[in-house]
Amino acid sequence: MKQEIAETVGLQALAWLAGNDEIFPVFLGSSGASATDLKDRAQDPAFLAAVLDFVCMDDAWVTGFCDSAGLGYDQPMRARHALPGGGEMNWT
Image 1 (spheres, rainbow, N blue to C red):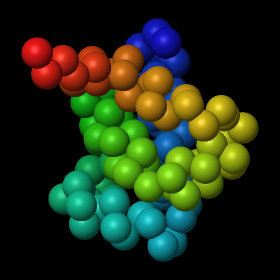
Image 2: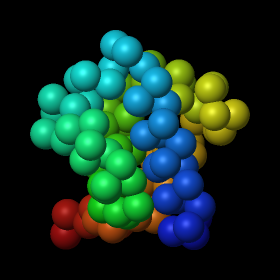
Image 3: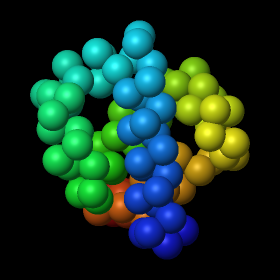
Image 4: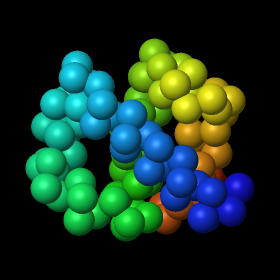
């Protein structure tokens, strides 16, 4: 996946989080971000990677996001791999 497309998926995930009254406060608490920070950092690929990391922590969040965005369930992780720090880990 190209980084531009991955950033779009990250923005979609951020919008989904912001519209979810149950999960959004959890994201803010986990990330340390404020609602104001979101506007300022929405174009930062590293921040969008963190958004996708957060969404990918729970299968229910992945399915909820993907269903609402019309994406395949593999898309958040594929997008995450295309953003900074998202390369596959090699333990050898």
